[in-house]
Length: 191
Length: 202
Image 1 (tube, rainbow over the protein chains, first blue to last red):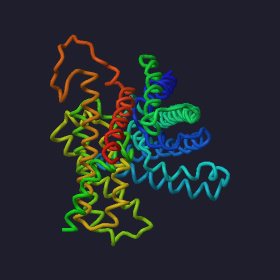
Image 2 (cartoon, rainbow over the protein chains, first blue to last red):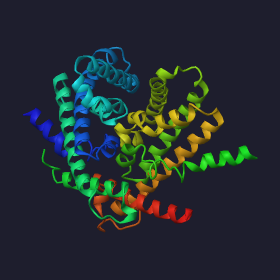
Image 3 (cartoon, each protein chain N blue to C red):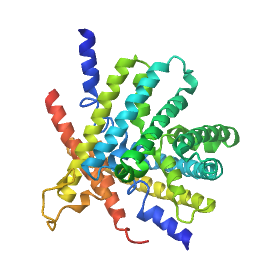
Image 4 (cartoon, helix red, strand yellow):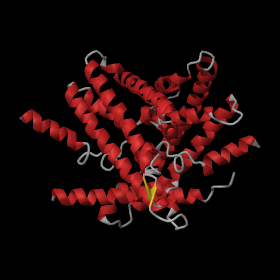
C-alpha cells in the first residue's frame, strides 16, 4: 500500500515538474517534439534510478557513519556527473541502439535538477529504505515523463495556432505549463 | 576610458539586455519554485548572486590551470563548494529562510546560470571583468526573482515583503501563491518585459 501511495503522490499530486518545479530546463527545452520528449524521459528514468540508488547508499554508508553530511551536495553532484559519463561510455559499448536513442540527452542530464533534487528528496522519505528510495525515483521519472510528453503534445498543436506576437515563444509555453499545472492541482488531496 | 565604458556595459547587460530570467531563461527551477513571496525571491537571488560572483572569481583565477577536458567537473566542484558554504551560513544565521528555500539551496549547484557564466565568461576573461559580469548577472537574477515574488505575493496574498495592505478577510487570487501561478505570472511578466524593452530599442 505504501508503494502505491508513493507512486500516486509522485506522479499526480506532487508532480516533480508541475508542482515541485524540478527539471524545468529540459521541460521547456526539449519539449517541442513528442519523439524527443520520449527519448529524454527514457534517459531521465535511467539516470535518476541509478543516481538515487548510488547516492542513497553513499549517504547511508559513507556520509552518515563518518559525520560528513554537510558534504552531501558536493558528493551527490560528483556522483551524478560521473555516473552520467559512465552510463554514456557503457551504453556506447554495450547497446549502440539504446545509445543512439538516449545519447544526445545524457550530457544534458547532469544539470537536470530533477536528478539531484530527486536524490535529495529520496533521503527524506518517511520510513525510508533503499527499495523505497529507488521506487520513489522511478515514480518521479514517470511523473516527469507524463508531464513532458503531455506538454510536448500540446506544443505540437500550438505550432498551428495563431498566437499574438507578444505571446509567441516563451510566454505561451509558460502559460500552457501553468494551465497544465492547474489541471494537476486538481489531484491535490488525493493522497 | 574605453575600458570604463566596456565595464559599464558588461555590468548592465545582465540586468536588461541579457537578463538571465526574462531573456535567457536560465535558472528556471528556483525562479518558479521559491518566488511565492518577495522575500523568498530576494533571499534566493542574493544566495545565487554570492555563489555566482565567488565562482566567477575562482574560475577566472585558475582558468589556465584547468585542463580543458575536465573543466566542467572542475567548475561544478568549485560551485558546489560555495553552495555548501551558503547552505551552512543560511542554516546557522537565517534558519527561517533556510526552511523556506528548502531543497532549492543545494540545487543552486545545478543552476545553469552559474555554470553558464563560468563556461561562457569567467573561463575566458580576467578577474575584474568576471566579478562585474557576476554582479550584473546576479543582480539581474535577483531583480527578476524579487519582481516575480512581489507580483505573486501582491496578487495572491495581498501583501508585499510580509506587509499586508488588505484586511485579513479580503479575498485574494490564491492561485498566484500556488504552483500554477508561478508559470502564469512569469508568462505575463515576460510579455511585459519584451514589450518594454523592444519599444525602447525601436
